[in-house]
Amino acid sequence: MWSELHITATPQLSLSISPHVTALAWLADALAGRRRGLPDLWRKAIGARVSRLGHQAVRPLAAPGAAAGPDCLVPRLPSEGDASMHDQLAALRDMPPDRLVRDLEQAFGTGPLPVQWRSAAERPRQWLHGYAGAVADVWSIAEPLWKRARALLDREIARVGVATVRGGPELVLGALSDRIACTERGLRINGLDGGRHDLGGRRIVLVPMLAGKDAVIAGLDGSDAVWIAYPVPGAQTLWSRPAAPAHDELSALMGPVRADLLCAIGRPMTMSMLAADMKITPSSITYHCDRLRDARLITKERRGREVWVGRTRRAEELLELYHRR
Image (cartoon, rainbow, N blue to C red):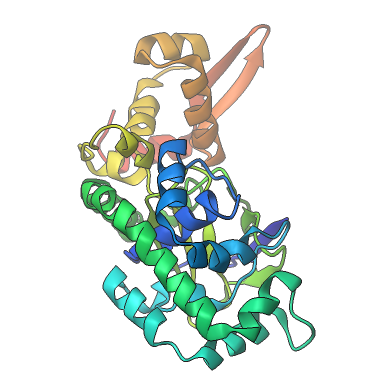
């Protein structure tokens, strides 16, 4: 299913650092069967660490085709600003059971609840205790890696900030995830509730996660803002080695590989020529060039067996803006 976020004007972007959303993504990937690219090593560690009650609490997230859940899965919303894991866990542990029941009714209506959530509604205190415990268990595994991600998160803050100041939010929105498509009408997000949402005058709050490459979580119903959580660029490098910071503003905006690719295409050239020049595998060149084409920064044209790429006028203006050639 696809959810559509209809955008009619340049959106206002902000960014929230909310590690609880990372913990939720890890729980969904490791325990709920929603595999989104988390390495097996970490999935197995989570499965072994989380208690039996925690496994039971996460089980509703595993229902086939069910993308919606109660708001209390993320008690301190990213749209309210940064939220520490300590604050999120405190909010979960102090949450009255009737809050869970109200959130379930809001998420699924006043009719019969989906079967996977009925036991939670019948024993809300037990569910909240199990879910809070599962989040805490996951965080005990994820926290060291999260601390190592500081450079990546700082780079992402800079990237979003540059896009906001320079007036190019579509460059950020179009490169959040392969599961998020930036169209003329707005954003289409794969795997959510399948509904249509109008952004109107609301803000878009971006929430970088340290998660598998296909992980996306979103809240599109807020009155003042919507939030979209996505893998922080470069997250995959952290599973094996620390990340390095970006080297300039253009790299902070679109990532160092795509910035260098865009600069390398000073004249039309074939994909194979570009791969050889950049010393990058053809599959990686294809992936990054597709993202640049989606952002309307390059063109691709097949001539016989070769695919030729060239910069667009939009790309030339962007490079001029950042003084990169």
